[in-house]
Image (cartoon, rainbow, N blue to C red):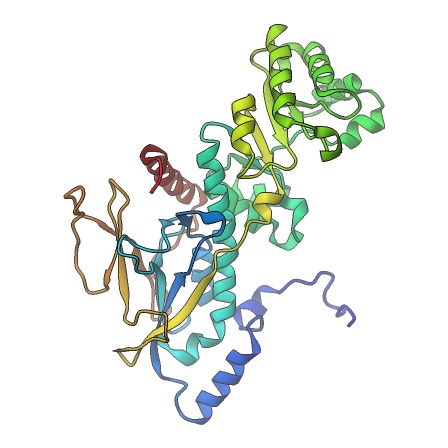
Length: 405
């Protein structure tokens, strides 16, 4: 194989995705066969569901919906789906699988788009779900997305978008921040200190030449012990120092909790109680809680977020020509999902169910699946990132209040 002359990077172009060229070949063969036998225009309803969630999570966050809307814009079909950023459970209180959305129309219009449809939802939802669980664990701490260097640069904006709407406070990548309408956030690399040759001089140079609205956070593990460099940074920058960042490699890290605890003590002892401790490198859902308990104030989270397991959505026929039918293991017929706004009880019903009352709280439950495309015309979009983020955070506040759902 040789790189084509018109490609510097192995990425799909937008028109190639829109034209179905990133799909699996068997969908094109199916399309050909159905056309030959005169059944390509068969009307179907196809259901999107998640079989299970990674890390034994009990709830996930739907993301990638706006890109799905963009994929099917102007195509002769109907799309019913949960709002971007909706918190869902894979099963309702009775054990029935919770649908995320539906494609309705002639199979030939959208059959070949199953692969990109699932891809758009699976990865974005995986990153958003993992990020939301990080946010719940580190509820009042600073969270920055540092994952750009761990994945292909073509999907950097996707990763940072999914992390941001799920509750992260900022992103480090320039393009992502620009798309999201944010100012990119970050500190300094070890290279700055090594090239200047002196930690104090490097911190002072950063303070002198970097924009004044950028928080002064000193990297403190380049040449000396974290405690020693932390004290040096506090004495060098004084009141201008917002925080110190630990990015110690595994070979020198030892017990990171004890490093954080010791650093906090030594800073406080010298009157630097306001200096924040930021940790990056190896931060994940399994160790972040213990670092918070040790005294960490914020985190730059990279690999664990950018490499978050995908949500394994599936797309299955549940009706053909308005008659319920499904393969083994799936429930036929189009459905609605209701959620109680108070206790977050989820219930799956027939789609024709008009309303439902929560048996626990006695209040009206909210339908989660909405029609967003009708015969190719977009009825609803979720392009406002801040509105989506606010929607997710309100749901996370409810989960934080309830303890678990």
